[in-house]
Image (cartoon, rainbow, N blue to C red; front, side, top):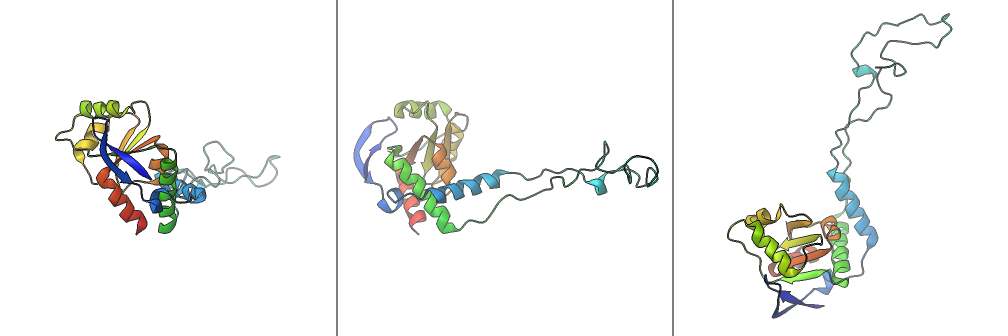
Length: 209
């Protein structure tokens, strides 16, 4: 699939690039996408929830009344979970929600997500994106030139660029990542992908390896 290369002014240049069919033109595997997104979201959970059980409650362990003859249910200490202020039964404990996912499945998921975006014409190739200093106004101007001010947009760079990142971080619905760190979740969440020309080779090398 051939796509035009745009400059920062939002105009198509004379250059065209071919999206590799092994990355952007496969048969999408939606189950792999589901697993990868599920793992990503699971790893975002802190898992620090905790409630005190009866062994952790401060208080006396003295039996508060005799076992029989009171006409009420038997009871132990004031830490009994049935009493107000008592410990909780089977309360939540700190937990790691992450799970293992094979690298090949994760790679397949990213290629499937990129294929979906390519088929829906949601990918734009940018000739070059360099900024001498962090300047949000310039980045907003770029969005205006590309006519994507109202859409959730993901910029994929070939390498880390602090100036570009700093210029974009306060702009809503805009995210900047590098080609070696982009996730399936990032790709699917965005309505539009803006891929730097030098990032294409990085993406191909990573996903085809």
